[in-house]
Image (cartoon, rainbow, N blue to C red):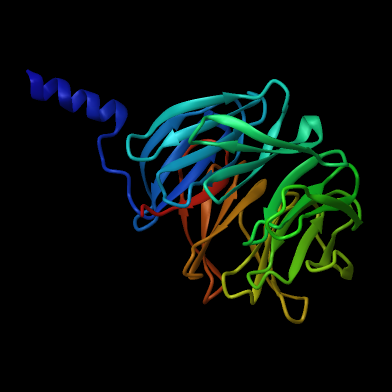
Length: 319
């Protein structure tokens, strides 16, 4: 009798061990986080999170995953060993959390509804820092490895924010860099020298010198609505999802030229690239799958079905 009850519990909760590495996927339609084994594409477990989850991040030790819940005005903190939500951080004064970036044991995030960026400390379960973004529609953020610079994409202000502090300092000075209409997607090159952002409102890629915040070049790339942009780990390729027509655009980072375009699926959004650079994962929110891209052949090699409305993703490795 006890074994039968245990089997029923396992069927409902999923008693499999969380894989490492694991692909962490947020499913907007389910208000849930799915943990996927990238080796076989199977879902190892799911965890309910707050309403309308958008972006995911994972702690450096691979123990915690985070979800920004835009309509829930909260951040979910997930224990990846037990697949349980251990905290739901309510954010009444930091509305519409979106972009996430984990660094130096803390989670940095944008509060789009309050035009600010902030920092959450998992050790104390507290927000310990906040800064006005100087712009509106502050959506995504990336940081340099030394944490001395933070870059934000400000969709409604048509600019990129560059927050810079002196080494070892506390206060960040802000520079706003005009780039074009509706910048949303943003990434820092692996060598830390350039910021690339895709302006969804006018189909351009703006390339910024990360050292001084100057605009190096603006490149026109035919797209309906650029959504996310990611460098490959070797810095040679840049992947851009076009949520308007379901394409994945692949560019050569040195020549700034488009090299290939793949049809993925409806509402093509989140992009994650495996640390070894062999595969990319691209979410099709409308068609409820994640396309697996072979980055050597530049082909769609498979599909993973993690749930309803997949978007934000992160990579988890236990250490």
